[in-house]
Amino acid sequence: MGMDYRKLKIYSKPLLIFSTLLLILILMPGISREIGGAKRWFRFFSLNFQPSEFAQIAMIVYIAEFISRKKTLTDDFWHGFIPVIAILGFVVFLILMQPDLGTVVALSIVVIVMMYISGLDLRYVFSLFLLAMPVLFILIFSVPYRRIRMLTFLNPWADPEGSGFQLIQSQIALGSGGIFGVGLGMSKEKLLYLPAAHTDFIFSIIGEELGFLGVIATITLFFLFLYYGFKIAYSVKDSFGHYLSFGLVLLITLKALINMGVSCALLPTKGLPLPFISYGGSSLIFDMISVALLLNIAKSGD
Image (cartoon, rainbow, N blue to C red):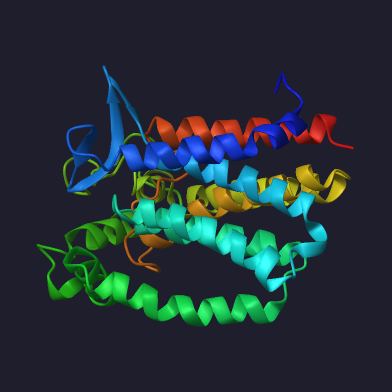
């Protein structure tokens, strides 16, 4: 908030390079902290740091700078589209190695939408979508735990006490809340029934404790965030601030949408937190940085 956000243009490449080095470093044996088979965290004394959260911000800053600098080339296949896709591909490959497919999907969608807003030919977007579908299919069904997640999403009751337990408990939590909920802090599902109740499935606990009204209020808050974020993006005249605002707002809103969709069993299980609400360090810090940048752009963008 205390700096001119336009100075980030100068540091967009160094930020992306530094974040990429962190993503490479975390894959080295003995350096990262492994949780549930995933190597996504650095451990500093009592603090955990997830470099993919930093990489998302760095990537959005870089793409915003690239588009604002080469706006006339964004629709050029070789000089505008391919360079961005190559950089995105390298970053998401490193994130996939952790592995973290949820972050890859969210970041890829945000970058493509940013490019489309800048004037990218819709044919390129459609072609990329067609190419990505078989790759996504392979990524899901070639890895056992992802395949199980997808099959569980299609029918959680096939294994109610195993792989389907979490989704079933999530739906029970949402359903038992009714209209007004069981009361703040009175959830039963969070008492060793629903796994990850304080992180990935916090939305289900909101539904149980605050009911349908609490769920609608939460969705409304994110809708207002999207509305006012886009309002900032459309009002700023600086092209860098314009695209940066879009990217930051889309990333936070998309993560919220995926998290709520997973809790409602509308999407396969992904390890994405609910922004500003789920317990977590790196995610909360970088979501707050995103909001600070948005406020910065609204204050100083012209």
